[in-house]
Amino acid sequence: MDDGVNNVWDDGVSLGNYWSDYDGSGPYEVWGDAGAVDRWPMFIEPILPTTTPTEPPFGPPPGPPIIVILLGGVIVFAIVIYAVYRPRR
Image (cartoon, rainbow, N blue to C red):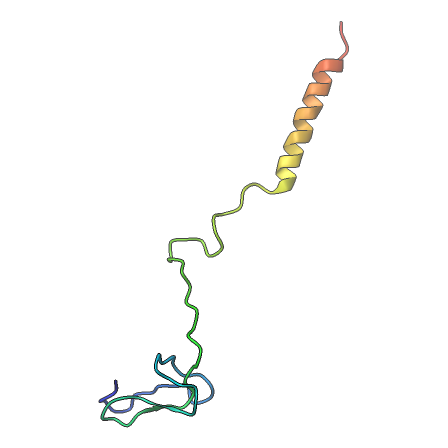
């Protein structure tokens, strides 16, 4: 609803607002006494993000890189081989 003055309902180029009752044809006349018009209304409802600001944007942080895991395995393997085949005195 717009009963004010100097309100802007689109960016003047190609982007307006989503209106649940917009039928997809022409500009959208904003209800109210101001006679305002959204010249670029969106026909499809925008998809808003569902994460909160405290959550990482793409899930939990990643675990250790695979190279760290592989390097740890190689070190453990080398220690075991050394312990089994070390020279006896």
